[in-house]
Length: 370
Image (cartoon, rainbow, N blue to C red):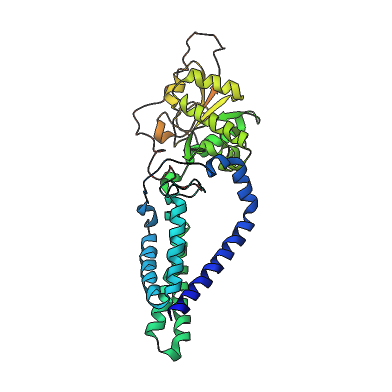
């Protein structure tokens, strides 16, 4: 019996290996691009790191039910189908080691971490739930009615899934909603009042490893306003390494100079940007600092650009003078010329009495590599 179980496990392991090889062949073009852009990260000796598995991500919402039932399914598989249970355990151990390569002193990094594993854990857990349900049906139903019992159980599961599916269409983590009503109004204004070839500096943060992403609606400027920004979509990270490094360095410079309008203005001139966009969600760029600077002037926000000269336009969603509750801000680079030490003031100062912005709220900064 033991030899038979061992043979079944070996055959399943071979099948899994063949499936993995086929999957690798399918994603080969993508893998080649990743290698060309990040080979220095993929093969590298990293310092030892402790395991910090984010259980809260694996058990968020209804996932905790799926994971719990999946554990029950695994226990039933150990009893009824040990070879299949061993396969799941082997797979998880393999993925866990790859996600914690520095912990096990492996000189390889495949853009997989514990956050990625935790988020995707519901997939094998769902398979184990099905396995547990099948085992329960097999144990509780008469042998001559087993087929009917399985069909009935599958129907119940399908019905439950269909009744719960509509609720998923509205699931969105509030901290990950970058575009808000005031931002949409600003996008309309930008489309109508800025040159089509205008380039904007926007807020960004280091999202995963060396890659950067936007913190507010500025990240959507290319889509919603057809304007260029200093920070393209995340797909830039699989482009040529020279381009990736240039974009990363630029994003890092914007973050470094966010509180230094003079340095930010010099950076804007260097890359040919004539505007700065700060969305409702915000980021390191501070409208208060830029509005008091002699290098930028407010062209949208605080009532400017809304058509009426007062906070709150006819649409009801224009930005007001409050930073967090009002909407977006657009600043135009106006000077002074290099070497000019004169001081000017735009005359518009965003209010500072509003609550702090939430762009650094829990959940916005991803712990995953995808």
